[in-house]
Amino acid sequence: MGPLDNVRPLGNLGLLGVVLFVMLAGASQSLRAQDDDISQQLWVDYNPRWVFPSNLELFGDVGVRTELGAQGWGRLVVRPGVRGPVGLFRWSGGVGAFYTKNESFSDRIEIRPFQGIAATWPSRRVLGLDHYLRLEEQFEWGGAAGSSVALRLRYRLQTQYALSGPQENAIWRIRANIEAFATVAGDAGQFKETVRLGLGIGRDFGAAWSAWLDAVWQKSGRAFTGAPTDDLYIRVRVFQSWM
Image 1: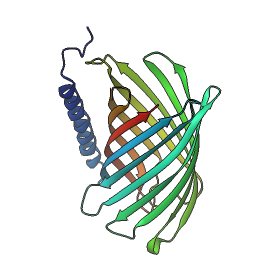
Image 2: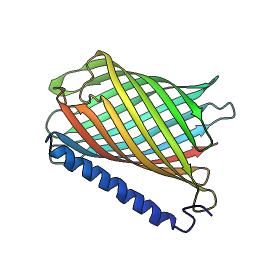
Image 3: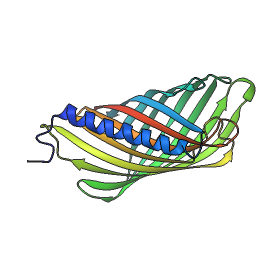
Image 4: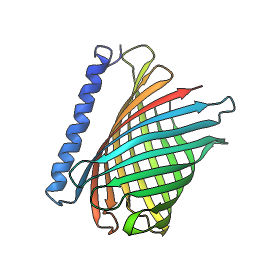
C-alpha cells in the first residue's frame, strides 16, 4: 500500500494546491518588504500532442496569461511545434504567436520561431534530469514603442519524481525546474526574463490526459526600461495526447 492509497485524489490535489498558493503568497510578502516592483500573474494553457509511429510528434500550447492589478496586461499565446528523436537527443522546432493587451501603453504583437535540443541524463525509473536548450528569434512590434528584434538562448534544467497513484491508471508526480535566459543580440522587447524557478504537482488521468499546477518565481525587466521586476505566478496546464 502506497502513501497516497488512503487519500482521496481530489482532496490531495486541493491540499497541494493550497500549499503552492501559500508558498506564492509568502514569497510575495517577503519580496514586498524589499521592493515594491512585483508582478503577480496567472497563466492557463491547453497542450495537445500527436505522436506518430515514427516517434515524430506534433505538439503545441494555446493559453492566456494575465497580470493581476489595475495597470496589468493580458496575453494570448498560440505556439505549435514539431519534435523527434536524434540518437540520444530530442530535437524540436516551431513558432510562437503572442498578442499582449496592455493597460498603460500600446498593445504588442510578437512572432517567435524557435529551435531546441533536449536530453534526459542521468535517467532513473522515478527520478531523472531533463536538459532543454532552446534558441529563439523574437520579432515584436506595435504602437509608439516601435519594433524590436532579438536573438535569445534559453536553458532549462528540470527534475521530476513519480509517486504511487491513489487509483489504478493514475500517477502523481512532482517536479522542480530552473531556467536561464540570455539575449545574445538585439532588444528583447516588452518581456525581458533572466531566470525562472518553478515547483509543481501533476497527475495523469489515464493514458491521454494529464494536468499540472505550478508555482513560479521569475526575475525579469520592466517593459522597455529593463528595471528589475519579480514575477510571481501560478500556472495551470492541461495536456492531451493522441498515439
